[in-house]
Image 1 (cartoon, rainbow, N blue to C red):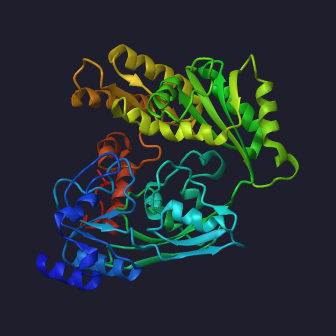
Image 2: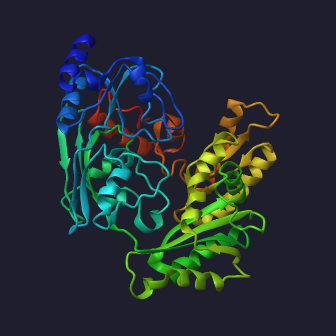
Image 3: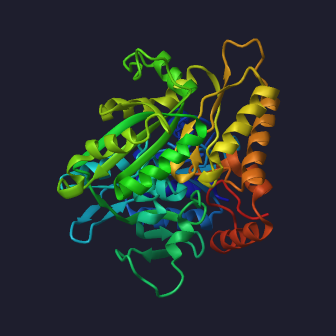
Amino acid sequence: MNMPLLILTLQKLLGEADLLLDPDDCRPYCKGARYGEGETLAVLRPDSHEQVVEIVRLCQTYHQALLLQGANTGLVAASTPDASGRFFVLSLERLKKHIAIDVVNRSVEVDAGVSLHELNTALEEHGLFFPIDLAANPSIGGMIAANTGGAKLIKYGDVRQNLLGLRAVLMEPAGEVLDLQHALRKNNTGPDLKHLFVGSSGCYGVITRAVLQVHYLPKLTAAALVVPRDQSAVLELLQVLERDCGEYLSAFEGISGAALQAVLRHVPAIKQPFHPEPCPDYCVLIELSSRSDTQAGSDLNALLSGCLEKLFGTVVENAVLGRATELWRIRHAISEAIRHEGKVIAFDIAMPRSALVDFRAQALALIASHYPWIRVMDFGHWADGGCHFNMVWPSDTEQVLSDSVVQEIRDLIYDLVVLGYQGSFSAEHGIGPYNQAYYQRYTPAIQKHLSGQIQDLLDPQKLLGICHFGH
């Protein structure tokens, strides 16, 4: 490879300000939002689709590896370069000129570098939003690559369910553009190739633009933080809400007492919602929402209150209604709060939601029996079968932090999830280096074979991304 010539050609294409070579300038692009840190040869910051096409063409010609990066908010290091220093980081943070809203079609055409917050700001004046509810602010391209879900999936679905089309630049043929920018909800003219790029961790091609289905902003909401009778009552409560509240149910988030207490310890502005009664062992954040303020949607508070009142003394022990902003602050503060407790051992898992009660009881018992100093501080999206079964190696324990024990815990929990309950070791976060070994461990051979064949077809030299989907 003639690296000086490649660098010179890229400088002419991008300008010196957007081809970063100095290690100090590159460092922010080499560290993940929460985990992962590596080295890069250079950071490329194109501001147009045409520049991306030329970058991909040049890197394929010179056999130079590229790592795609959006807002770099992922938690599995898929957008963070490794320690090898072999990658150019292709940052799409400047690819954000285009947001074209079609109000009648209820869709938007948007550049991949646009952030979720920027998109929703533009949509808001039309009474619309892209309803992926997250504590982070990722880019649209990154959300597609990870197939982001979020807290409102039960009502609106994940990114895949709201993706109408996209445009991607391929590594093979070099710089070829796959233009699938259809704003169609129905298009049965062959395999729907846009779905190849969803959840691909940026290894099948460079997404430069997306067409998304958007939704009307809710005009009314109602919220409650509910204490169930016991763990099994959580799913009883969910069934009743789905039956009696129907399409109005927009969130159903489980919060363990340990997670709630961590928030109260480390976020002084948040007050104990059940005071003067003590913190419960478990509670559930419920939200109803309606895009209409007429007919049944006119009083969601009454609908939610009436539903819970029927369950008091049997399924429900306590509840705080209203104060939606305050209650959501608790939920969004959990991840940051538990980081103050010690070393976080994070899990992003999913299973049939009918299995969640048994899984949680078995997992808690295993941790208590084998690792009694570990504190489980779990929370998550019970309505869609998702659980962040996070735990903490406390900073105040006498047990010395051991990477080998952390690995034992990961293997124990993932075996239970995947082999015991037919679940997923990565519900939302994707693969990335942090999950690559588990992909190899649990993914059926034929699935790895087919996924690897697609990767070989689109990138035979393995120049794009850091994940490998074959054997």
